[in-house]
Amino acid sequence: MLQALGMDTSAEQVYRAMLAHPQAGVAELATRLGVREEEVRHGLDVLADLTLVRPSAERQGQLRAVSPEIGMELLVARQQAELAAQQQRVESSRVAAAQLIAEYAELRPATAQQGVEQLTGLDRIRDRLALLTQETATEVMTFAPDGGHSKESIAAARPLNRQLLGRGVRMRTIYLDSVRNSPETVEYVDWLTEAGGQVRTVPSLPIRMIISDRTSAVIPVSGDDPSAGALLLTGHGALTALCALFESVWASAQPLGRARAKDERGLTGQEATVIRLLALGHTDEAIAKRLGVSPRTARRIATDLMERLGAHSRFEAGVKAVRRGWLPAHDD
Image: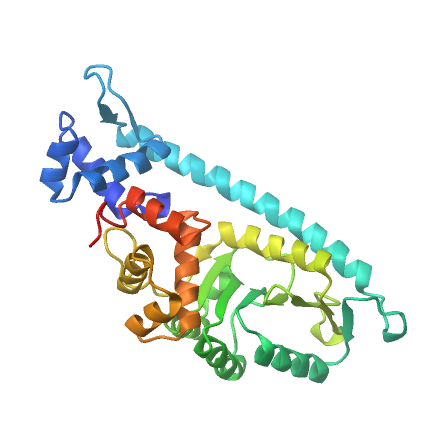
């Protein structure tokens, strides 16, 4: 119920229990909620980060819940500040992207620089995108600022996306918030999400963009006229900047599409299995065999979990998973 305000299910249960039983300690809260004490402590950590619990002045060494009147106001104010900061980042990115487009807009084949290929005409653009789809091995990141999809564009996109996801390619797409009003697009996104893609939305996007394997990016010469042509960028500096732009917008975007069923830890059944197998030292191939998916798909799921944990290695992921309560302290 309060997840939209940054509180997971476990933390919300702990918060409600503390409000109902202000004298209860960790052990009593765990008993009342029917969970392990580690889960209560995890919930308390989340609540502390959200400033929804404070040290009690009456009970030494214990925490008390901040009243909902104060706590909810703090959460809403925090979200408003985050939204304002996100909008500022997007606007700054829009300016940077516009400068990048302007820098290359006048390029012609005779004056082409290394790392830049000019694509003239819709046919050439579509052919080049089809070739990039065939060559993509690991990841596609897309800004889609056009609003809702038409039935024709959805019919054309499904086979390409099915091909990519079938190879275990990680797909992340950012749409405008307005697509939530398009039933055809929401239905398509539901299908894409169930197939393994990830979709989020933001109020505005700085540029239309497709990044493949972090080594090539296609951007339009003119944001207002797609038929004016596009640029295929492969230079390291340009790709580093565009990937950073995507990650910045992605971090503050909101998920769109049906969410898979998750447990009290916020994990799907598949994710819970992967994190346990990772902690036991299984390889991607072994995990893939256990899940009945390709090794690339298993690797993609493992990478997503490591990112969520903020881990740089699989060993570190196991340690952080235990601390977060995703795994018991001793997993047989």
